[in-house]
Length: 399
Image 1 (cartoon, rainbow, N blue to C red):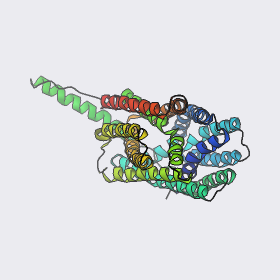
Image 2: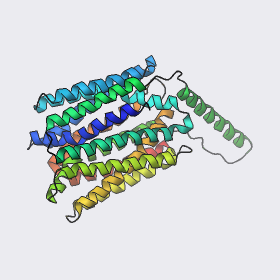
Image 3: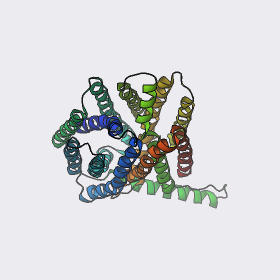
Image 4: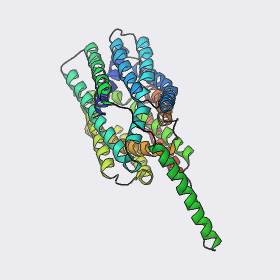
């Protein structure tokens, strides 16, 4: 039940995720993509130190609920302030402040899941949380489709986003509780240390007995971090200008603007299926084994986007199918990496996962729209394809 507030929070931001780029484009017809890149990059760059700060603070104080409430309440107020201006410069400032306070709930949420459930249940617990909140995101996108179809104006749409975050705040105030004891991540760290030492002693004994030498391998945490940054960078380059790309092919096909929301609803639906799949298969952790396959699959889907760009017939249907599968792949990647990060990242640095994802996201949100505006979407897709390949190499080294 404690997740219910997060459900409504994701509804609000699911609606905002597609509405805001289209709203910016309506305010700045000629330089809209440039401003989308600026607003996203500014927000994400500021969120990087904020993620680390909130993660450190919640672990230091061992209080998590207060930062979740701060995030949801700040989102409520700031989204309301969005309705008071149409100046893009002011919207950039407000969105930047929103991003700093919004990420206050991310690290506490990850720690809550890690501490409320045993290590062997982490993948299934993260999968359930992400799947549950992704349904909220999906409903938010559906809500955007309905509001767009009935011609609801920008001010009222933003008020809906603000109201949903207010509901999230109220529910979290009632339902979220700090864990009574904080020890699960510490136990996992001890287990990993003992396991490594045990394997070292076993191999040493084999060598002394004259048996063939084997290599004792430990996870390369730096390679894991590099893989996270590269994957996030590729995803952000791809998806920051994606609503504009989807809008252009929808308009070219003669469909109404509301279809853009419908396509992203299906993308979100693919993610929900992915979370359910990850949870069903996680009787034992499988992230390390399957992570590379997921990244390669995302690379293949990016290649298919390049193919879709060269075709005019059925392009809307083809892109929709690709985005559904991309949502599925991203869900698997997020569950696996979240679970692995709770094993690898020590207590006191709970925000590091969000920092690494934020670095790639911030760079990508700046670069993606710029490439789209200056060189076109073909170059966007090719750049993302190369970066996904680099992420695959980094994650292979991690193993």
